[in-house]
Image (cartoon, rainbow, N blue to C red; front, side, top):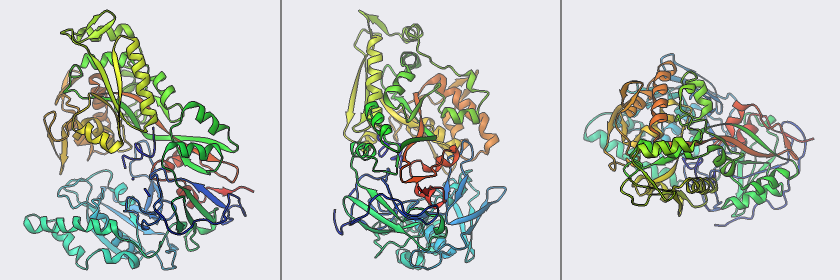
Length: 610
């Protein structure tokens, strides 16, 4: 898949000014911590560099680079079952209350901004205020929002305590807090009015005054997004030096709290606008690190053959499914969906579409198979695997009333049936997968076509509007159980969870494009999968497991999607200039999507090659 646009875009181009990186080259100097050398990479989250954009992490085009120049309190790790597991960022340590009601953070004792000023609890409090203007997970003004903070207390200059609103608690509360980007109050404080915290207190109430306060806080969001600091002031291992349309250059922040263990002296981000440019950089050995980008087999072989290149792999909590709009016939019939599942060879699809970045789904469960083994190991063997079986497919189609005439399957009234699959332009793995599925279906007598949509935002818009019969859908978004299953039994399938109350909308209403049944029978019991999913939003690990088992069985037998492959966190590294790349699966999880190799660098893992 075009990683910059889908897995990453469940998440962000670029004009001109100063020339960048005059005579720098990719050569190492020194060794171990603080040695030197230029580290070259790309930002997989954002194609294109815009020289005029501010060093603002909230600006969609902003020249702020997470893990390199911008810092969070902690760097969350995609643990199989613990959504709150993280490695230290600007918070050196933290303590979570036994009942999950509060988290107390201790800042790095030597943390300083790149202008030499210390990082303090006041910086954290102001940054949390800014997060409220953006509707952050833990810092939301929406009444009854799950996992929202109730109070922010500066205990001392190095300690901050954040309490959770226990009216609708979330097991992900700590994750939401730790994921906060921290900004320097002496640069950013002007974006918040002097009475901000009074407004926030008022916003937590009820009535017209509270609503007005919430609107005022939300209204500050645009001011935050457009704010342009005079220069980059960073608490990370690097600070932005200059940027042009070709590249951005960052230099080491001598005040970074772990500066002695930061190997590169400089980091260069190369511009790109599409996968082909990334392929060229990789085949030429120009990149020390790049997040995974889908490539055809011949290109992948050239990349791996380039001197020093290596692909390192770890766990990625996301899968891709072939999703059905059940308001469209014949996809309202479960036997049609099951028949298609029996016709599609997932091994073949994955080999064609994502051989390095995916593992064929063992079955449809709604969960990444690695996470399923951790959450519901006893349930996994009970699930139907839907291995390719033409005879079973024909039985299912006949049960649905489909008719095979002259070797082609038609609808029950004899009218033509064509499986019309949609994918966004540029999503090379999705399009390759759909072309392969089309070939498999046509061979089995099912007419099929692949329709390309101009871009991902339009794709999501038209998908939500119910314009497609069949589309690809990212699912299994762990590690939190609620996030995993809300992709199948959330708003896209009719269920909304507001302030802990789950309601259901009819197919075609309120973005319900999947149109699945409100109740499903599992093991002789009628369940409401949306309500069960809602329960996961406040369930602890032990309470979540039996709920997840029921939902996995529901997904397996009802097939709102056919789970095709589970993603692998595959990344490209080059060993010619730097070493120390993590091969430990848990540490490697830090490098996926929004947490790039800057996190490895600041942890002191990466060393300049001798």
